[in-house]
Length: 342
Ligand code: KG4
Ligand code: ZN
Figure 1 (cartoon, protein in one colour):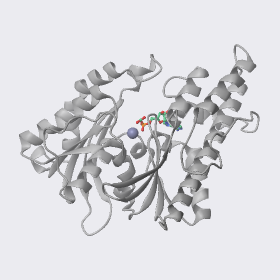
Figure 2 (tube, rainbow, N blue to C red; figure 1 turned 45 degrees about the horizontal axis):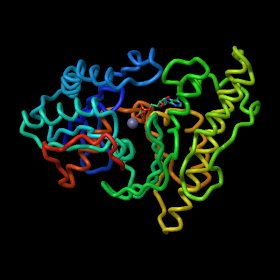
Figure 3 (spheres, helix red, strand yellow; figure 1 turned 90 degrees about the vertical axis):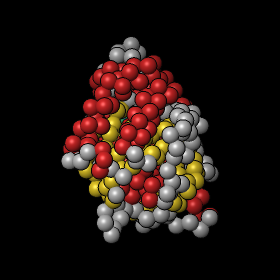
Figure 4 (spheres, rainbow, N blue to C red; figure 1 turned 180 degrees about the horizontal axis):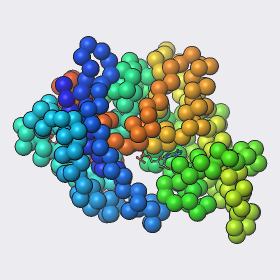
């Protein structure tokens, strides 16, 4: 079975074709075309919704055509068309959702509306055929969630952020230090050469019951340290700030995952794995810490390749395929859901 997937909820335009593996778990990515709009938004220090929507319109047709030709098939050879219907920016969602419906209608194929967060949560099944139940940590510029994934469509949110998303905190700290948007990769690069012990930054929520996150206090503490350093922090100051900030994030993430596992244990649920998704999942320090933590906890840790953690079409196609296999198709009247919770 093959599904074409379309993603336009934020600042990546993406189209991909995935296929399920015969007789086994997991899937095959036949094509995965992604076009990032970062360069267009960089000057504004963040994603500008109007620019994003227009940019999706400009390139989506071409990306869909390329995704099909890379997969060496035409539209008639897909079994269904899936598009992300939210959560995200309404203008962008409208572009991808409308295109997906139009392609499905033209080809006479079923249409599937996919929740973008569900797609992040299910990516580990595409890459590793992971069995339910498992614990998913979804960390991106817009989302920070710990979710018990018990089945397709069966998700229990254990915790989320009460203020900023983790990626947002990386981006804001990057901006404070003059790094271009998105700040995450810059902070990681700076941190690699910095002294993580130099600044004693807070770790909000550490040790608290439940699995919620809070990042705004940490962000404010970084701002205060920068103010204390004066007008122009040196390169060493910036590296040490980045390292100290990233170390705080790592501690918070590990603590919250530990607490989420405790919540599951109280329900007698033993997850098969811990999986990470979302753009922040590309962060090496977080991946290393979770690898270590999972080994100690006797848990499998699944970290899809960075290009499958950040927004992409393969994850939408795969979530569509999983839903389609269960007969979960949608009608062409499906409305965009910019605030669609998981
Ligand atoms: O999932 P994504 O591509 O888009 C959405 O926000 O949905 O995630 C982008 C976020 C940005 O906040 C970016 O700074 C962050 O992921 N990010 C990172 C790294 N690479 C991307 N954060 C920390 N370390 C990284 N290496
Ligand atoms: Zn995302």
